[in-house]
Length: 77
Image (cartoon, rainbow, N blue to C red; front, side, top):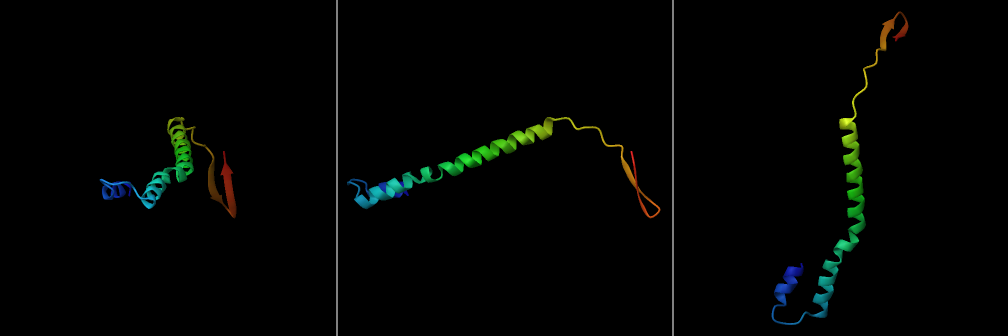
């Protein structure tokens, strides 16, 4: 957008409309600044959680067993 306006205005002064269009395109990052921050924070939390899950040793498997018994379920430790 800005490059197109600049190419069209080569050798002359910018018109007020062109200046406004350039300022609008240049300010677009300010409107997305909060979104970028939120996405960055969420990504950091996801990354830290992934490392925690990856590097924490797993605990021993449970020895509890469930099996059918007559008309019910028998839970044995």
